[in-house]
Image (cartoon, rainbow, N blue to C red; front, side, top):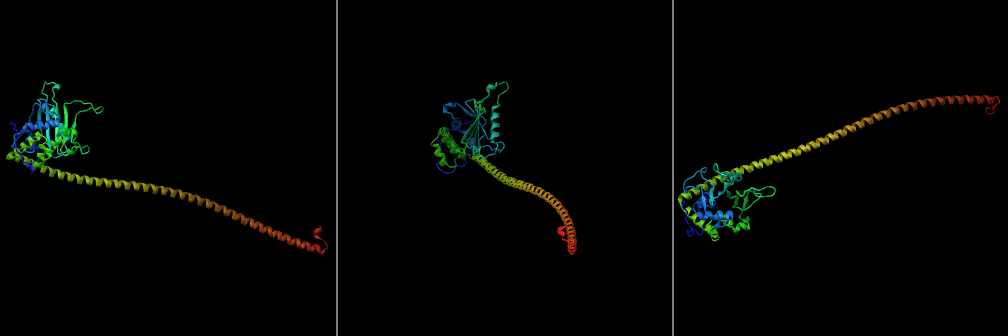
Length: 354
């Protein structure tokens, strides 16, 4: 592979970039064409000094300018660092919602490289690094995140031979002091740049970015490479259109699901209300039945009292008849006494003296 030096390579000072730096074909071409840029990027990503990197080599180079289909284009850049560490670099522009599984697959596939008869201790460290143009975990946004196998209780490291890192190009404002010290914010700004003015500002801060700018300019002047980059841009647009349609359909489906849930909740509320009303009606019915039973008992009691009243009335009538009979007897006896008195008086006798 031929590496070119571009420290003095001129590039424009203003105007739009012909190809966005988020173009994964241009990303691969840049790292493959300029080994110094590759070293500079890896130094920042792995927090290494330039002295700590002896060699860095891409093990899956492509023939630049050769046409690729969407399926045959190799997205990840596989690198061997210091003849020991395996590094997978990948720039992903469109969120395909599979990065977690994809990165784990690449990581494990790269780690499982022992040849028959080799000792497990000979397994090489593997680092999977994704430069993503979207936020992987929206609930936990982070500019540069690193993941390793840890004990879930005490957080002790299980092994330092597996590592996953994610550089979120959309969250440069969240860069930490350490990120800025290693100029990761500059690299992210470079990949997000759309104008030569932005690139020139960054080139003043970082020599590797200055070289990268020269290499990018040279690469995009080559027609075959520019055409492949443009083909990737067309692919992005198609994928974005598809993703837009999927997102819109998903949003519409989600809206329908939420509406259905709302209707279901409303139906459940109405069902609960109906059940409550039914319980109230049953309670009122039981109360009415109880009142009816009480009314029947009172009616029976009234009937009993009426019967007693009738009996008393009959008894009163009988007593009245007896009183009348006695009155008649008293009247008859009074008449007889009166006659007797007249008779005695006619004979010169006084009844009171008898």
